[in-house]
Image (cartoon, rainbow, N blue to C red; front, side):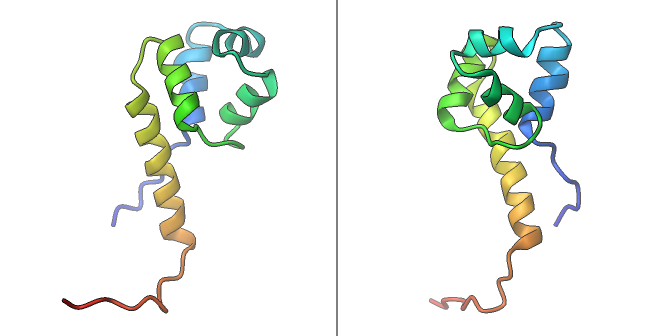
Length: 94
């Protein structure tokens, strides 16, 4: 198992898109049709990127919704592996 901690997709959205393009939170919120708080929560890793948000980000920044969803899944799965105790889970043998 890799110990590499994948970044929250909001970090990439902030550094690779919002900062790079010198956009304000208000401008991005307007582009995505969401509140500034929603954008703030995503880029500060307080909210996950939902499938709907992935579609909006993909359209606004001419990228791919699957890319954003894959980032979110990798982040979520890494954190689940670190915090989930599987000791009581039984293995089904076929």
